Image 1: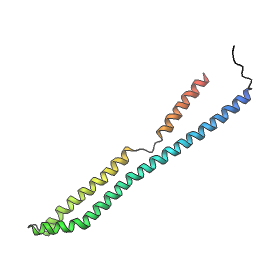
Image 2 (image 1 turned 180 degrees about the horizontal axis):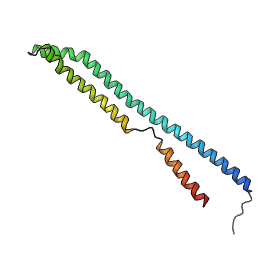
Image 3 (image 1 turned 60 degrees about the horizontal axis):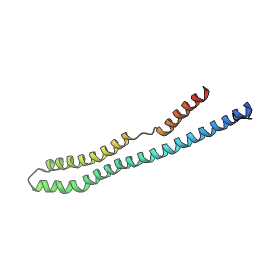
Image 4 (image 1 turned 90 degrees about the horizontal axis):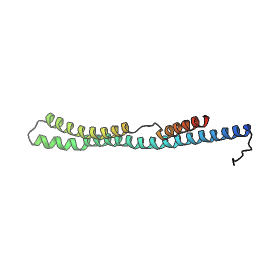
Length: 130
């Protein structure tokens, strides 16, 4: 025997409207959480860039002076010693900056989970119409 549904068409549309509003609120909440998580991860990657820059700068100030003096004592001219040390320290800083940039490029702010659930919801809604 078939179960009987005593709800009117108006009541069914009201329920559908409420369910749709709830679904939309939940999707917006999911997108907000997902974007917040991704933004904080990108902030950490940006910190790598900042640390790389600070390390490169500190290296330029502290190590450069000492290494230039050492190379000059070993027989190089001041300018040649300074150029060699400057290039080495700049390369180290460059490696830190590249690490941060690579990490930022791998991440995306696109709310992929929200997009996925929206596609599932659309597929479900199409199935309900038929």
